[in-house]
Amino acid sequence: MFDLIVKNATTSDGQSGVDIGCKDGKIAAVEAGITAEAKETVDAGGNLVSPPFVDPHFHMDATLSLGTPRMNVSGTLLEGIALWGELKPIQSVDDIVERAMRYCDLAVTKGIGAIRSHVDTCDDELKGVQALLEVREKVKDYLDLQLVAFPQDGVLRDPTAMNNTIRALDMGVDVVGGIPHFERTMVDGAESVRLLCEIAEKRGLMVDMHCDESDDPHSRHIETLAYETQRLGLQGRVAGSHLTSMHSMDNYYVSKLIPLMVEAGVHAIPNPLINIMLQGRHDTYPKRRGQTRVRELRDAGIMVGFGSDCVMDPWYSLGKADMLDVAFMGLHVGQLSGRADMGWCFDAVTGNSAEIMGLEGYGLSKGCDAHFVILQAKDKIEAIRLRAHRLAVFRHGQLISQSNPLQYNLALPDRAGLTVDESQVRGSIRTS
Ligand code: FE2
Image (cartoon, rainbow, N blue to C red; front, side, top):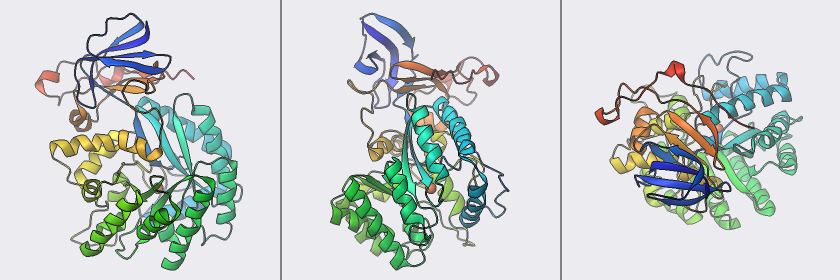
């Protein structure tokens, strides 16, 4: 006797017409024609059933703050950082909690099951850390929130940042962050990488640094990050976020760099929406794309996951917690248009990012947590093409969000005829 059977699913690894049996919050069977009884049965109707979306790079302390205290007029990264500096002293812990909880609710309805959020530690009161530790606890039944201690103003450049970053880790923040390209010099940047990786090694933590978020081809802190990962034995526990300078680097240098990253087992987290928006701002034409070398990194064997980075905050006015928007942009900017490449872009916002975050029990095979989302799409490529509607979201085998099917006017002929328009979609029915 199962607690739940999802009938007639197409899985993200390409199986069709399979049933997913769940018991005690775990997936107990994935096979065609399960005949055992269940307390509840859901018909997936041949739609794609995927493990939840995973966002490996986000800023939950800043999200939904758009316009407070003012808008980013230039739309640039540096004005965004300055604007964030204006907002920090005037926001309260309760403000941050309230915005973050609203975002988490939205994320759940969009099928996100895990988020790695950086939290700014350049604040002597550590308001963001206090708030997001509270949020991590509040949402744990329906969302895995992993926090990165992020010294936004530079762990060496800001006089109290190192102390505050260590305080944040003592308070329970999960991952060590950094921003070497924002330190005063290249030498300081390299030193910040060394110091922060040593902290992670001593504490047995993962590392995820904003690394080389720049168009400067000489911003090569990823080289130091790979070196320190190797030196300290942190293989598999370190990620470089953004890595946009790699787009502008000399090809010969990159031919040495990527093998060093492979050797160190460093993961890569591009953030396509934000990178294409914020990079290349000093260029006239031709204008560089602001995304790292996704195809080359992936083909070399580096684990690449796409992050969303920002939603309605000082850096980015748009966004709706939709990891399929992220995959869609990453696909275009990376020119990943082959059939296998497009499917891989779906993996970049699901399984790849789960692996980077070190999530346990993730997946759609027997023994995994019964966390999954039913998408109104027949496969991964259609899901990206349509930024497919989320029909139902399950956590530990329990329905936590659902909505009625949409009429897809642009769907392929065999997918047309689905009913109900958007006005009838119900919101989240989160149970916790
Ligand atoms: Fe970021």
